[in-house]
Length: 419
Image (cartoon, rainbow, N blue to C red; front, side, top):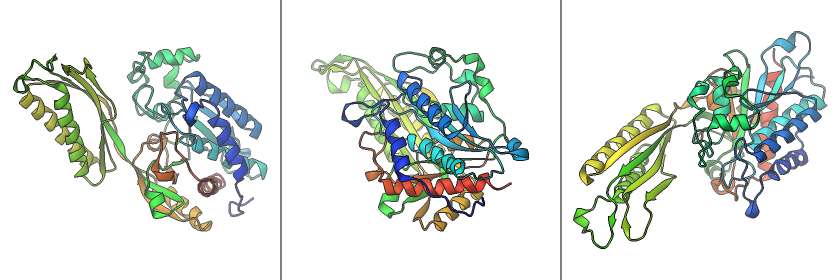
């Protein structure tokens, strides 16, 4: 069958698969809690393995826990580098039902259409669910795809800890994986023909512009830090204002500097999402504050300038307020430009189906930014109502899901039937 023969996705199947994954880790109020390498995460992966087997895929789990399912090609085509499609199944704390899961469900739909219609492939197609894409548990995201793409060496991340103090290496051992074997999950340039991903937008651009699909041309990357400010804890009533070394007011000044400098750079955003003040009593001047800073951008130069400005503000505030500071770098990544040929392919697939689309950057990080290190990569976005994501109120209308999955499946089909 030629890739020009149009195969139509099944809305009921897409919805059913999304609902099946949403039942795993479901909490009261619609919250999702399927953190990486937890029991619910393992249950979701077992369901995925079952779905893959039902389609006829050959399944495997690599040394970091990434789940793969291969739809083979025949003859000489069987040995060609496969097209890789998919996303992730882990969630953030109190997450939603579409983030990550949509990308896996879309990949399942694409290979189901190919298998059901007996399409003759010119190369295999592999579905992947990358492990630990979210940074919520271990403080660093896209770990599974980063290991595969060689973004870091395994020993660089094995000591990462969750909020309970459990190390990543120990979490792997708990599910039967050995940290010393993780390096074998790495792949090389040329091992994959391409990687395609689809995700909810996590912003309001598509909704506001009334487009059903976003074709991503670049992915912003974060610079992340943990800042500790030490002052002096004193009695709130007995310590005059001019004698205070208040760590929290110093932190407030720096937090506003993050907002100010990021607002002045058109392609950069800055966020302080975690803050802890000690000793945490109403009648004590805070003597110690720990908080995180997340600065992201699609322009390396602009992001770097904002980071430099924030660091200057930290040092100046500490000097003026007589505070001590300690800065820990949690992650430093470069923005990624996605493959121009694949971008044009995705746009062509949207145009063929008369799907309204917009070429746009992604402010959120995704597995595609890691896979771009070793193969041509691209991704689609679909609208998320009011731009909400990482939240129980996360919602995308079925017609938008179907439009995105259709363009995604068409692109997969074209790539898999071209030699």
